[in-house]
View 1: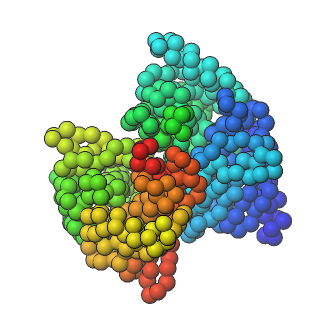
View 2: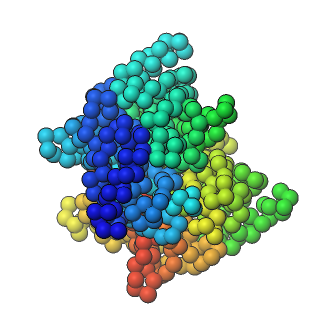
View 3: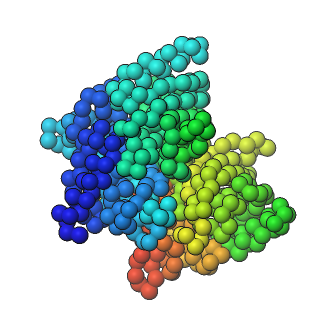
Length: 138
Length: 138
Length: 138
Length: 138
């Protein structure tokens, strides 16, 4: 696949996820070993203090990890992941960037940073690491 | 606080989270060291294969861990968590039950199981563990 | 295998691990889905403040998780694990108890508590959760 | 502190850890936000298949994470960590390199890669991520 075909394929998968459509997630970059997802923050993404809800941040990290792993493995699912919240997610957009750390036949280990964008400035708000496995091996 | 006051207080917090309102989460049990959240699954909670999206499961686990930790610490946030997906979340309802494993002044370590209910039968679909910290100490 | 055969088999594996022999780990219980390891603490297990080193605690948790998973899967390795340190490991003995939370063909998710024993009293010092996979699937 | 003073200080701490002395760990680099530990593998570091024991790898990652966090926070402990084993640790030396991803007053989130060196070639065998907290805040 060319990069253009790859991102179009990735966008079809995202569009086929009703939950991602509900939230409004966009796939803005996808290449072998690297992915970027973006989410324009709305009021209904937030928790009681006005920050993006930790569950939204975890969703975005989980999805980015799966895409990153899938870029190396093909059809894939997240087996497990760990996320550290390092700063309240304040701003108008979340960006999740994930990379493959190691990929074999049966698993890919990926890392992800989730950034909150406010006034054009990105700040890391969460760091995640997870294991992605091919669907047949799951 | 009595148990009734405690769960009413917990429900106010949940109602104040626009993201939890968007998803439809209910707080069905809250006592010191234990919490239960429920989510009636709708189509827009799902991913492309019809299962509850991993991000929904992670959101529910994250929220249950925070409530469990908060039941021991007071106002609290999830510092970090880890989640293992053990089975596709198939069914009509998700139930997250979280317990405090250890609580001190500066942190509570909590565990959570997320169960999918289908035809009245509960099956574990995810297991999580995380660190909750008081808001002032975060 | 009977329980007696099972624990004898488990002890042979432990004896075949030079690192476990160096540390002095004992397998004190092994049945399907549950395991207990014990380590009599020596001065050379400690860090600069006199507590058992976090690496010793992590080693014991890792090993207990692998045994628990192996009791369900057969020959197995730890794919990944997460450990929370909840209290300094003070005392004369460490006990790690691990249980299978969920087991399928390709993975077992297990949890472990590590307890430090001082003056006959056990206190939880760490809680771990991890993924164990069969050796052929690793 | 100059870099030379910093690494000398770090080596004193390592020398004061009887467990690190037992294993033979060396601190080969320490600067603000980055650390490198090395361990010459001996037979008694191994498990039954001749690889470095997962517990040795976890110990080294845990220690490197603590040093990295400590380089930003001062006296510090590992609150929790997660480790993915990506390849058997085969070779004569382990190298753990850890970096600070985010540091505030109450926590540092750090990542670590553990590499096994065989015939002069480094291969990633584990990836870890953890939370380090100042000793007073722990």
